[in-house]
Image (tube, rainbow, N blue to C red; front, side, top):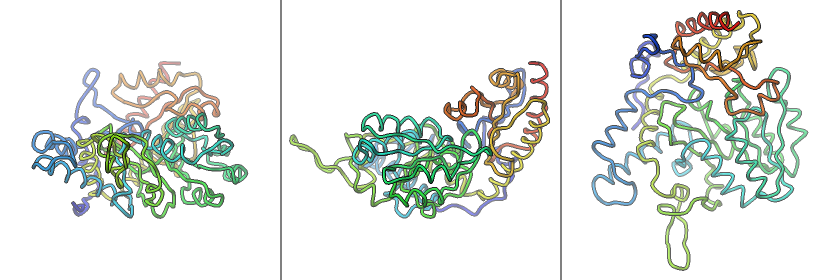
Length: 414
């Protein structure tokens, strides 16, 4: 299904599509949800699409010739088409459904990495990375004898491209990085980093979990070899994500998981694997979750993504101003105009966890902790930080409420 004509962006009207946001908690306080970097909420259109499948058309896909299976298979493949269109992939068979960003990166590390990385090879990451883009590569290094190296940051909290250049060599086999930091909010120059990596023939993997939901994504213009992202960070359900891979590379890769669906023929002597994308979708896939992701994409396509980004910038700028008014507050990362839709901060002498707990009692949900980025926090000299992350249904009024509440909470804790 092609997207409908885009509707005018209005966060107040958009909120009406999200039932979970229209409730009160903790002594009838209106819920303010600022933990979108971890997981977003679901519009009723996504909920209804998934519910409709369970009620009317659910069956296993690609295996039955009865009506229910044909309906589910068609909806499942329509979701793949929606993903292809949303990220401007060349072919639908480049779109692999996985369990999420973590599952996608592990698939690359196991299927491509085990076959191509050897002792002495180097895997280049950045200090910005989420654990899901660190641990699978560390495991690959343990299996193969490869070495993991990290690109450092500048004092401004951006990638040090000179340091990256010094690390690149003929030994560099993989360069993997986030398109947006889930802590600092800084955007990485994906196309530039990719071009640098390609000068030494390295495979390029992009963790796009924090950018695909918020910015226009064109995998062809990025030039990378693999892109990974999750459904639950873009209005879709948990348990489903996407690995986009360049077809020429996917066709050379052996499947990581074996079982049903991924095969062509199985005999007592062995097996042959199937074509793309089935080769990498062993077993029963996340059928209803993929259909929900397809519905989420259609919802986002009916809104101008540029307007979402502009709206988030307004929220970030105001949050930045309000937080910096607090004595002892330090915002992590670049200036407001140079970041994506999140703000991470610490306040001198005050526990980040305590701030989150007290804000929650006032109805405001933020994140506190290391945000699955412990190496970055260690380099910054802190154990934890607070993070407020925004999305299309958040309002400026909610940001004002957070700023007012934060001042009261800090005063109380001091």
